[in-house]
Length: 124
Image (cartoon, rainbow, N blue to C red; front, side):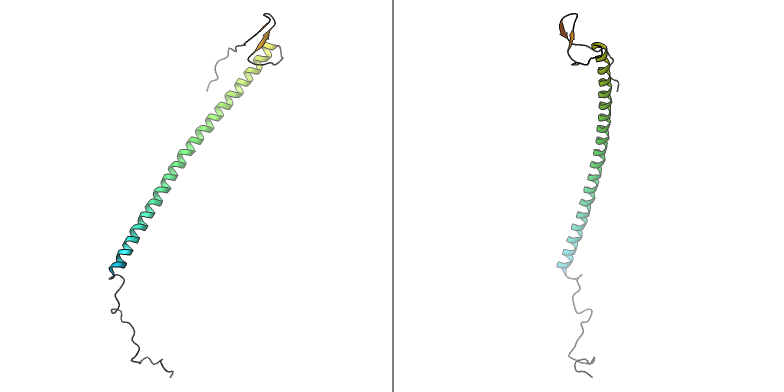
């Protein structure tokens, strides 16, 4: 047999299970593990709160975006309506010749005057 490989060699001693202090018995390790566990728990809680906060902010911004899109649509519709009304009015007042919509020459009075359009306000 090879030297040093004899299992009955008295110089080699295997550690017995009870001879080393377990990690559960070491107060420093226990304290460190407890602190680490609490820190991990606190970190997970902060992560959850941040995710919840971001979700609420996202919902709020989506509602605001929808409201702004609705307002843009309304203003675009009103613009188109008023532009159409102005074009129709210019054709009537100028005999088909478009001019500055705020100032028109009156051949009867030899002066410029403001034209007022009597149309109902655009309905929302």
